[in-house]
Image (cartoon, rainbow, N blue to C red):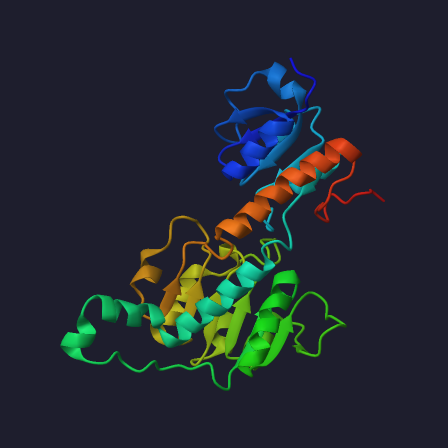
Length: 320
């Protein structure tokens, strides 16, 4: 038995996380968050964990010496942070290193949705341009639009910065107004949707955001409206969205996230007025490598100094 801390990896994780952790720690790799194949002796030695996905309270309870959980991603709703905090366990995530990539993808998805570039490329690739003539004019344009951002955090601010050169009006909804921006603030999501004709959602999964983009919000967005979601799929009431897209309540939608990934409703796939991506907003090699490094650096820093680099608010450090 080495003197190195034992780190648990439940399920799949970015290979760079595993490779770098193996240089500094002993690893206990299990198939999933049940850790069914691990012995009690092994679990009793675990002091750290690295996860991309679920880390439930039932697993935390079986790790009496656990000190820190490094979660891969900005969102960490798969980790039971309440149970972690109650057990004195720090949870970290990977903010900032993916802000630019996600913001860039958001703008690309917005343009793709409005101008239907994905259908235009298919028109060319299938030889239809030559056989049938020019691709149909896109019914929508970004010109003169009013854009509402649902969630003006780190990524939301980067999205807003990229939208400014497009000469669109920008407004936002968050729990509280920000003092460092001049954009119009709306204290309700429905009020924001009513004031704009593009709604971009970039909020985490919380009880407050679950299903918050519902039939009422979509109706407020209106028949010229476009929804873009790059936050969490659970934010959108998917049956209400399908109905709104089918009956013209809104004009279109661009989605990178879904409620039950990787399962995407066939009704969404079949619609002609949507642009769909398989949760790839941060999916470039440089950005995912940076996320992996931050997971590992949090664990290294914790065991070397007793301090995390990027603890989540629910398990702050130092504790008050």
